[in-house]
Structure formats: C-alpha cells, structure tokens
Image 1: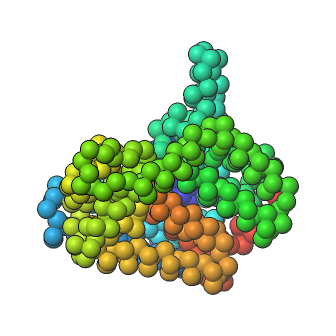
Image 2: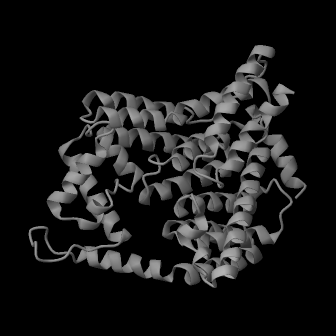
Length: 402
C-alpha cells in the first residue's frame, strides 16, 4: 500500500501545478514522509538511470549558498535558500522514489493534463458565474482568469501540456483538448505565452503534418488572444518604440517611459550594467537592492515603482553570481537539451525550449511556481537512455492506444 501511494506522488505533484502556486508544498511534505516510511518498510531494489542534467538544480543551489559569502543582504539570501530548496529536495525525492517503484512518464504527463483540465473548469466556471452576476467579461482574461497563479506561468503549463497532447498524449483526449489549451493560452493574454503556443502549433503543422489540429488551434489562439489581449499586444509594440526613443537619463524634465515592456527593458539594461561592474555578481539576496539603486540613479520610474527584478532568468543569475551563475544555468539546460536530442526525447526538448524562452522575459527562479516546476520537470521529463528507462515502454504503449 505504501509503495502504491508513493508511485502516485509525482503524478499528483504534476496535477497540482496549474491549481495554485503553493499547492505543491503540502504534497512535497507528505511525499517526504511517505518516502521515509516506504524506505523503512521495503528494501530498495531498482537503480534506474538519472536524467542527464540532474545535477543542475543542486549546482544552482550550491551557488545560492556560495553567494552568501559576498552578499550584503544576508537575511534575504537565507530566505532565498529556503524558497529555492526544491532545487535539491525534488531531485532527491524523485530519485529515492524511483529506487522503490516505477514512475511511468505517461502517468506524470496525465497528471499534468488532468490538473490543466481541472484548473480550466474552475477558472471558466468562475468566469461564467461572474458574468452572470455582474454582466462583466473581465473575469475571462489575463490575471482574473489565472486566479492565484501568474498568467505567464499558467500559460507556460498550458503550452507544455499542448505539446504533450500533440506528440504522445497519455490520455484519451480528442481535438477539443488542443482547442481548449489554445483558447486558455490566448485568454491568459501573456505575450510570452502567445509566442510559445504559436511556436508549438507551428511546429506541429510543419514538422508533424498535423494540419487540422494545428490550424484550428492557431485560429483559436489568435481569436482569443486578440479578444482578451489586443491592448497588451499594442502595449508591447508601444513599449519597444518608446524605450528605444527614450531621452537620456540626464534629461530630468522628460517623463520616463512606462508599461511592462518598458519596465522589462529598463530592468535588463540595469542588470547588464551591474554585471559589467560586478563580474562575480553582487551575492545571493543582494540583487534587488542593486537593481533599485540603478533604477533610482537613472530615473527608471516604472521599474523603480514596481521594484522589478531582472525579469530575465539569465540576467538574474548574472546579477547574483556573475558570469559563473550565467554559465551554470546555461550549462544545466544545454546539457539536458543535448542529451534529449541524442536520446530523441522530444518531451525534454520541448520542456527546455519553453523554459528557455520564458526565462527571457521572467526571472523564473524567483517564484515557487517557477522554481518547483523547473526542478520537477527537468527530472520527471528529463532525458534518459531509452534502453535504461524503465518507463519508456509504458509511455509508448499508452500512446499507441490513443
């Protein structure tokens, strides 16, 4: 019984990601307790291979700890260690679980898809109820639709779920799942999510020749995206234009460009400036004070008012730990992607590609919904040699039945 429950912990974790940013926390605690009980009662027999790049999370966490040595904000640094502990905890939990039971990849993918469907049912049901009571359609888009989750992160989960459906769906889902996923990505009005969803559907059209689902889903994505977020697309273009033509910081009479796009460009510029002055970074926990100081000096009002982090995972790592941090992050993801290409593990390639793209516009290790997702996903869907994988046959068999 203990081992049977343990085998369902990874799928349950995948199920919870789309529901709430902190929903996985109590499950991880229960997973750890159950794992201790299972190890006490049963002798581990399995020794499955670890996915390539398994070392990435622990290595990044080691940099977090090392960065405390030159940090000027020790309290914030210690808090960062606490928040990002999943980088070490999740690989350990997953590895120890695989020593006792098989964890079919299809079951984990199915857990994510079930979580996405549940989150859509809750969000759309709430939107219908709100519209019936108030006559407003505001609940159908962006942050209102995403609820407790950041819209970009929820769109990220949907994009990966869409890829899983287009390749090897572990569930008996018809075309309607692709249409629903595309509609959700469009309604969430995340500019990064739109691009990720569009890229996945274009890949399905060009490479997989899945013409009907790809074209129908692209039309749904464009239609819902335009309805829910046309203003955000205009804001993107306007932000790029105004920031590129922004006056020099010395012109105090001129207003600073505002908007999320302009704010991101301001944050990127400030982060790059810090890296040039601090090639080893400013230390764990000191990134935000360093960025705020640059915003104040330059008069970047939007970024300063919102205390924006670097809004780019690569630059965020560089600000904290310099070129070494940037190399560690890139090394982790490149190692996983290279092994995925070698083993023909397209789930891993998609996971890394979407993560690498989202990391360009978000500091994905600064929120639980990003750091836990990355630690979990790069182990659960990580690339393993086909002959050493105890679950690849199960996944392929499930796919063949769809």
